[in-house]
Image (cartoon, rainbow, N blue to C red; front, side):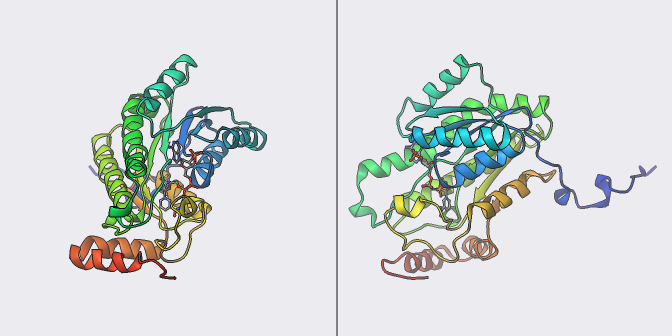
Length: 290
Ligand SMILES: NC(=O)c1ccc[n+]([C@@H]2O[C@H](COP(=O)([O-])OP(=O)(O)OC[C@H]3O[C@@H](n4cnc5c(N)ncnc54)[C@H](OP(=O)(O)O)[C@@H]3O)[C@@H](O)[C@H]2O)c1
């Protein structure tokens, strides 16, 4: 016999559109890159939903100021851990530090990252390797170190555990003049989608967030604004995209901020690779505006 579903139950809607409020209340979320831009946005959004925070980046003064802000605004407790994630010992050090403090990580937001701009032949090799170390190495090591804790939290706090890895629309195609950056973000997208599948029946919410250009310090760090294409998003818009994804029963594998960015990412996925790299090569040319 067909089961009877009450109004408003899951049976009334397509499963992927149903809201399941992501509720990290009573858990601790670790946010990397919390000294600036999107990381600050994630820290606020998680504290607003009742999480305590572990804040990681190199600039301690900024992390401490953020911790005070989060305590005043939401009553959140933050643990500040200044750390250079490009260093090989950074993640083991962080894991040990949190173990000593008896802090269990319920959600992990891998947001720290940076890009460089220019033809690869002219690039500073050390800086490019740091980019791989932060965008890929640290993100992978952190995911591996904390995934068991996240899975335990998914059981103890249903709808309260998440893994959010921040990629970019750069993940969908090669990006001339940001060759290493595009490749690191393609890695983040592919890696996180695989983890999404492996953990799909555990209750852990896993997603990759792919913003287009956002109004943060990112392009100052990359020392060039020529690679930005289209309208700059606000940090709030990226937060809305992220938490819209986390609030769904079936968390999408990835979510793209901005309609134009979503259309371009789709084009990049479907069009011949040569055409795609030619277009992105023109778009990232020095001196181009708009
Ligand atoms: N803004 C954009 O247009 C855009 C678009 C798509 C994707 N994204 C991605 O979004 C993420 C956040 O970037 P954002 O836009 O918020 O840029 P941002 O304002 O420059 O913030 C980058 C964050 O990463 C941290 N970070 C960089 N290197 C680090 C290191 N070696 N060790 C520890 N932390 C490090 C920085 O902290 P410290 O300097 O204090 O260490 C900072 O908190 C990045 O992964 C970026 O690739 C940005």
